[in-house]
Length: 275
Image (cartoon, rainbow, N blue to C red; front, side):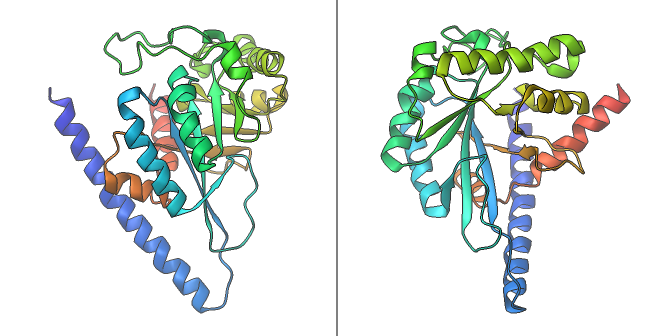
């Protein structure tokens, strides 16, 4: 019972930080333009998980806001180097069936591209990595192989989310490499597409996992946590959901939460050091 008030406090603190970040970024960009310099185009990548029946109306409103806030973009697409346009990319982790049934028609109607990251070993099944029966997605089945194959190529890109959705740094090197290579191979076999994108389960990875992802043939990987000094191979994302408050979602759309992956990366590093 005590967790809910604490979560609201943490969310409220994040909103204050995000608002400050947004205002500083906004006025800095204005100052750059005043001096006649060109500002790099901005890209924000948002990540959903599921869109249930009762969340559909809220999701549609959020997508309409997304269209007004910026230019929809594929997550792995290269942004123009300069410009005032704010690009927004949409991703979905876990491959839930409700994304195909509920989110896809909205994306098709509004012409918003998205990337789906799928743990291929659970296709057509309940999420075997969720052990808590009270988890909001415990009873949500993943899409079938047929649904995955039938996703429109012009609107949906497909990426790997490993085979079993296991925390990769907890696995021996051989097992982790299998998760990366086998998921890529199976997805390519099912879809007939070249799979070059990966998102790490739980947003947890090590430098070893980054190197193995390159060896496995991925060209870009995504996570909600970043390490300082990482190159363009690793790209940060911001978690969103239909339960986001309006001001929260407004700020996320405008890139005001783009600092969160760096903070989470520091947190994960500190935890691993003290372990």
